[in-house]
Length: 219
Image 1 (cartoon, rainbow, N blue to C red):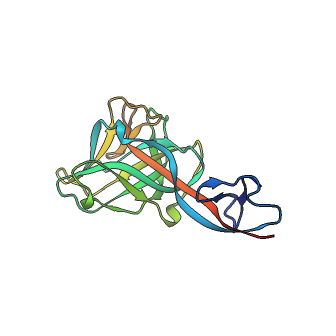
Image 2: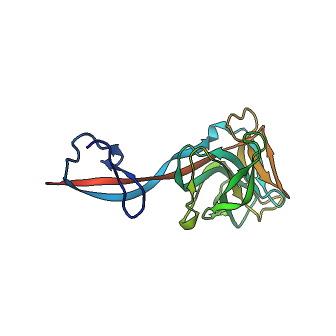
Image 3: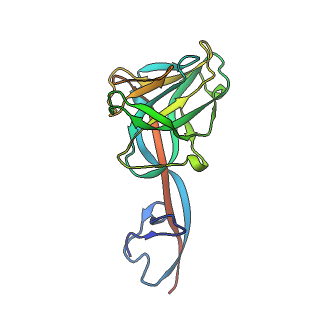
């Protein structure tokens, strides 16, 4: 065989790999040959992103503005693994922040905003562990929050922090200089609002699921 898939326990067809992430080649598995495989899940490639190299503007999560994020389009169909945002702190904020995925409303790239309740909420991040310099911080999604994202579908990702103050706050890295992402930034301040001239720095990751061939067994 060449490239091959295996469907076990309703997982759906999943690619069989060798040596970690290498596709099978012709004759790696012969007709009626038994092979030993193991199922593994890894953090996959970004489904969409706008990297910190684009950073050029700031906005803050405080006692007035409690959520900031970006509309995006999933490149492939995948279960949600994690979200990363570009964050730092000011003062001595306490409590936790979380990332959330929402359904999309509005015109993509112009006035995209979240609609309805969050589709998924990440594990929390203790904001006191942030530093006063920007860093890409990861939010992992667990259990039922590992929702499926569908290729070419538009969503909105937000980082939410609701216990900030005017002096103890979390800053979010954006690009308001030359934004080039197809979506747009949005925020919550007594209601959802958006700007076509701002993009947030973000990453949305899916899962890489594979069967890994451990050994070949003689016919």
